Image 1: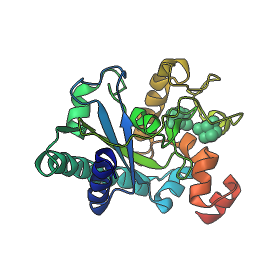
Image 2: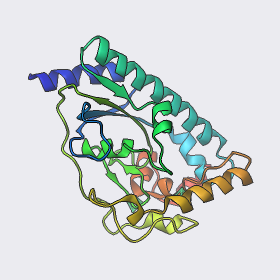
Image 3: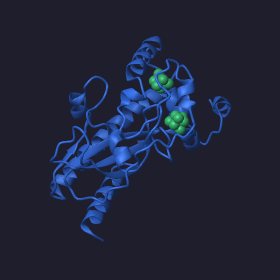
Length: 242
Ligand code: SF4
Ligand code: SF4
């Protein structure tokens, strides 16, 4: 086993012991806004609980909203522990993209180094029409965080093009047409395929209307890959269950 493989295996075991379900490894060389001292990144993912996701079709998504908050806290703890482990035990530099650091980095609605970029660079998924990372196993159901590092790691094979094919399921359910015809590829800016402002404004209104109980998220649930993770075939199956 070479050094890259050994390091990757060690940090993956550590992160999984802390609760990460998915760990991916990516080279970020050449990606905009990535500090030169951290050429590599580690993506950590935890799937949203199935029962919480299924409430998206109702007007009371409280369980989903709470689940998203608690996953965000859990991911935050894992990446910060991962940063410490890389620095103190493995003797490399690392920077967790913690909530506080990402919030400082926000420009408009997009983080300068989105976790989704690490997702595509590590080969764990592609960006769907709905601008979410779509993983073949979990669809849009993964919550993500990232650790930047200079540690040599065995990086995955990047995905550069959408695998959405002719599917438009997320576009069809979006109540405000925030999703357009153009499909993602790694050369495109988000504005070309997704209107984040329209989506954000709608979610804000939904939050007000339902007193914080609904976030929308219909596009993510409409994705056939998410439905496969949930074990449902049609919307009717889902409605029967809730
Ligand atoms: S979250 Fe709702 S408003 Fe935003 S893109 Fe998805 S379906 Fe459209
Ligand atoms: S619903 Fe279809 S178009 Fe949208 S992200 Fe999923 S596969 Fe892609």
